[in-house]
Length: 395
Image (cartoon, rainbow, N blue to C red; front, side, top):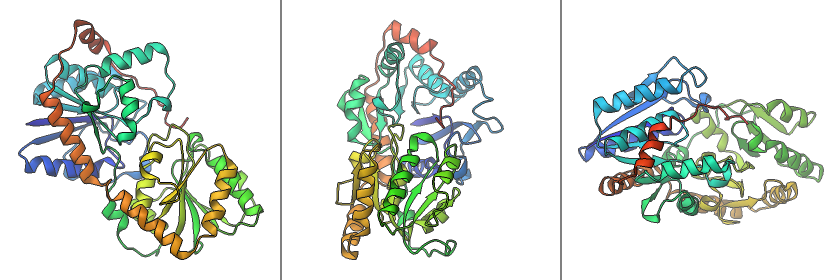
């Protein structure tokens, strides 16, 4: 069986997943072709990882999100699919042109089609026309890979049956994060600290979190704070923290260095709003044996965080709740901390690369045996849909 997986770019967390999937498929006698459009990551330019061994075909290695056109992508993806003639196509969110081309090719050539995505219905506002179009296009998809069972109701909203839905999209290499290492590059950091990691942009809600931390300090809190990342909100955060010696800002770090930063973290905080469609930093922190404190609006909250078992949940608008959690962690005994850390390791052990492989392969087998017949109207809509190229990544 020949399988093609296509997306705008495969960077950050994807190479390790694709490596595991390719190895698994090869052992079963299947061939995986990997298409990405851009050589430069759309969102995670700071987290490039080596992927030469994957033989990824990068269509436009010298172009960026702003310089590549929909027409070019649709033409070139369609052409390569005709040349390879795969049995099944796997593609990402239908909003992007490579997915639009992949869907059109699969349906016109009566091939099986799998889509993967991690956004919940409430994450992004849509008008009635966009909602109708998305439902119609999703209606031609044979199976779907999402992060977890917490997404089932959202996918039912788009018209999928429970049988079409498979899980395991958002996983990390737990073994890497659990490896023992020494904090050799960060001796200047405090002995213990609260930690935030990620793009410093408005939907991450770091300004509210930082205000809560400053009030925690005013009330006598004694745990320092380390904030790792950069972005449009960085200057605002620096101004808010001006004059507070217990706050350390660090730029984006490689995975190897971030693993060192985790060592002395008391707790990872992720205070994001709904646009945080999952929050893979939570997977990483839990695999590294850290307590996590996660906004209830983050996609991973219901799946990975068990209240006061391995972490804490809170309203992202409530500084009071954040402050209370900070003091609760500050006052925990060593035994209580170790117990929560161990529970986190147990929970995240079920969310490793094997889960991604299992979920994708199960979706492939289902799609092959349940290829949909679609109406003339659906054929026309799929033919007309070319995707969008609008960058809202930092808003």
